[in-house]
Length: 186
Image (cartoon, rainbow, N blue to C red; front, side, top):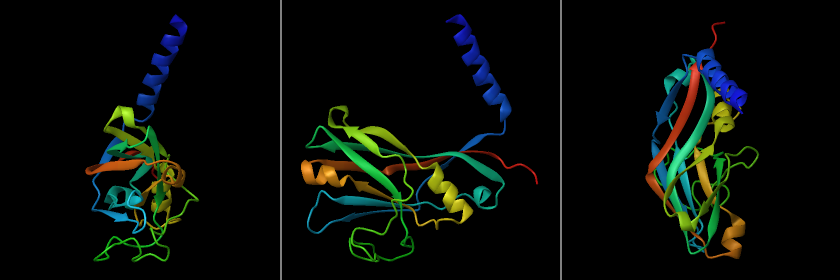
């Protein structure tokens, strides 16, 4: 037991020493919109667009981890599942955003090929801060494999079909926390 504790402390010290230049960037969204299905008011989706910091765009920093953080809760059900996907159609500069506009598919254009970690919320916990790992989405934005059209938070289709779940999200609490380190000199 004692050797395990010493080993854990040593590993933590090595991790901190390995990257003393590590830092966290906290990015607030430049736009947040909610779109609601005209046939199912519980199917409310939240669109979030972030302008990424210049240090990331120029390659001076490397993303180690990226997490979407916000306050949310569920009601009218014991629990609910919320998915986070990257949006595939530009909307950040559109004057109006609605369930069917500017999308090719009603409810928003997004890919499920790459996703943030889905979030399970329990009604008994009330409103709480939740987070989803979106590291690979942010890395794809920066590499150009995926255009930065923001994220969409989508209620679970199963929840909408099989329960009376309602989601509540505090738009003002949404942040993108990016842990990064200095890029190696080439």
